[in-house]
Amino acid sequence: MSKKKIGDVILDVNNISLRFGGVKALSDISFDVREHEIRAIIGPNGAGKSSMLNCINGVYKPQEGSITFRGQTFKHMNSRQVAELGVARTFQNLALFKGMSVIDNLMTGRNLRIKSNLLLQALRWGPAEREESEHREKVERIIDFLEIQAHRKTPVGQLPYGLQKRVDLGRALAMEPQVLLLDEPMAGMNVEENKTCAALCSTSTTNSAPPSCSSSTT
Image 1 (cartoon, rainbow, N blue to C red):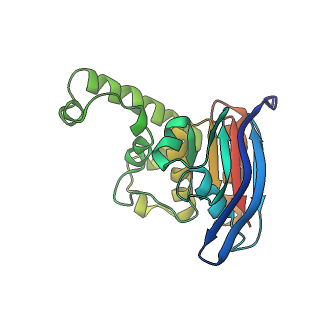
Image 2 (cartoon, helix red, strand yellow):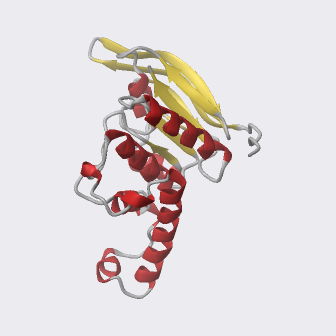
């Protein structure tokens, strides 16, 4: 499979500083991410890697600096605005719905793309039923891509940690993001799980999945 050519800057982080009281979590951080590019933020525990991703996706509000996404510059956005623009992320500490099945967890990643109102969705009637079928078809393709077909109806809480990580990645991919933020995607995995995750992340940037990826790692 040929690698896609690196494109223009899609995400530009400028002079971000973040403080919690007297503690400086980030100090004057700048970098950019281009289309079809993989970038890594490397550092020891407590270096501020997750804090940087939290600033990008609207969880934290930095005291200084700005973030430019596809030519639009923001000092701060909330998480929903960031998701609507096309930025998705996975989490260092898994934030899955443990009692729900794999396919239902992935369907939550389609939430922003659902157009039917809540009443029609609840009744699964007419256009809402057709729309749900279309979204489930896209989710099934992600399940095939992640090779978790055998677990599609299994409650996530019953899966091994490595497979839960894969579901977390799948939920982010289900958003069809333009930028995918991976927060320590291989933390806690064994050697075999690390190899599988690395292959999936690499393939996602050269296949039909997100064109740009930024990750934090130790």
